[in-house]
Length: 315
Image (cartoon, rainbow, N blue to C red; front, side, top):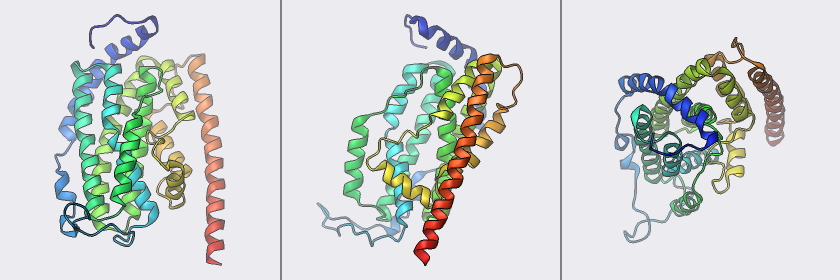
């Protein structure tokens, strides 16, 4: 940790950081032993690329240049613009955990691995002429100019958030590749989702140790995060419209969030049947349970409306 005089409400946060340092070091060692080196440039179909209009005198972009479905393009742009805000994420996390010790080593490693994703996604989109590059650059400038500041109140909240977020991102990448219809894109998204899976495992297992260390505190953090979760890219221009198309396409919808993100994560953490919780922890589990029930109902209603809309369009 950097040298500083802690404010009164920071004391618990600093204790959590100190107590979890051995856990971070252990899971960092496992990550370094497991992570596979890969090179973004080898996943980009450069042979498919052509010069764009501008100083090189190439052809201007057209929506007919690449046959990717609109929802897939939306997903790729949302994924990329989310990755573009990496400097803000790094700064925000470093302000909370510092840059020394195991926490600092992990943060820099995580940042380096995440940076590959943005490079590879942008190069793929440009090479495949999959999206309007002028709009993409303008959206990038607008989104990054806003920056990002986490609203998570404590270290346990921050860890709970990145655990859910990495799990959600992994699933979004996987599903984008699955439905994109382009073997180049599918291969790239599988590779990126493998990284996101390892990041999720790191944060999840640190949180599991945190639950052993301070069960009520971490149970409350997960309840707060799960019941009010938003993806870090929610401020991307046109996010709501893009997210709606992404959901209708089945890349990431309420059912995905419930069935493929929250349920498996809670099961792996053994959170919903964790013994030894105090009143605050039990109240947190009750909140999570009620939220899952509401989410499941909303997911079923969304599916019914979506199915009805598809039938209507066919008729």
